[in-house]
Image (cartoon, rainbow, N blue to C red; front, top):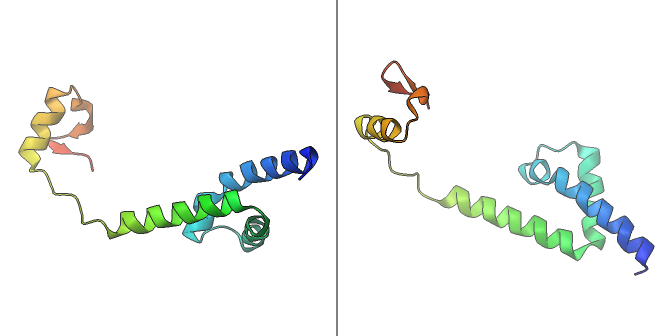
Length: 94
């Protein structure tokens, strides 16, 4: 690959990264999806990034929900951390 081709691909890779989340989420415009897929067909690095992001999202969705913290404990924690602004009329904004 020539230096000019590499610079062009580097810019294309940066452009791809800007819309990567929308692409993986399936919310990217169809025409842009075609561009992303065309680029990835020739760019192993971007294919690895997309595959890694997809796997990360999949693993995240497979996690059990976090345990809930009782409201009184959460309130005490917010007060202790001087985050009272996030408490609304005795309740915590969620």
